[in-house]
Length: 101
Image (cartoon, rainbow, N blue to C red):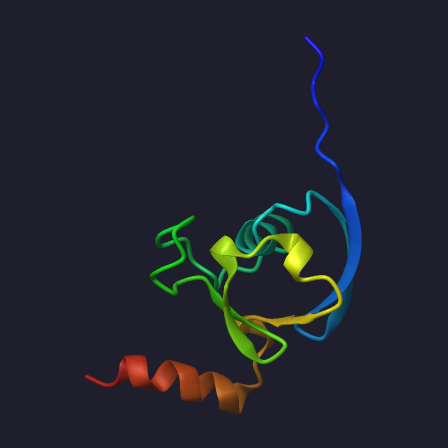
């Protein structure tokens, strides 16, 4: 039986300030790419592929994006920022509300 090869796509985008050249499945979710390829652990899988809980949220060109439902083709030419890429002051702004009892 012959395997069907998925069409690969080449694209460039920025991840936490670093230019990334991606060559792969354009339908792969951004969350899967971040966790499995880049070893970035801040986006969590809470409900994939529904995209309702927000555990996988990242910034895409400054706007919140649910990475579990975002295919890699949507990322081409854009900038992705995860918790790991936030400067310390912004990171505290995000984390502190969760720490307050």
